[in-house]
Image (cartoon, rainbow, N blue to C red; front, side):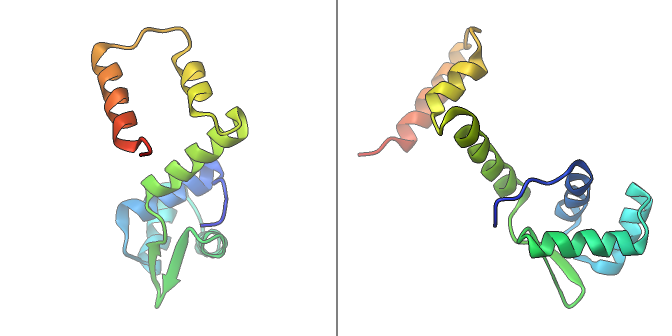
Length: 120
């Protein structure tokens, strides 16, 4: 997937696809009309744009995702840490924790995550 941040309306549209995929494009139009009050042309315009961005595909009038919702948001999180904290996970965690104390459970989860992903 190319780097692309969804707008608020695109995010709602994407959620509709992620929750219902695979979905026929005609059914997607009906859902978007009901959920977002969009016209058919709006749905197809936004779908085409997001297909060109490599987030979804529309083959034989069936819409599916190229990346799952989790993959999309993981990529956005990585980009945020890179852009905001120079890619430094420790700097991000320091800002995220913000002087609060971690519970024993949270600390143990982080230790396990670090151990599971440590090099060597």
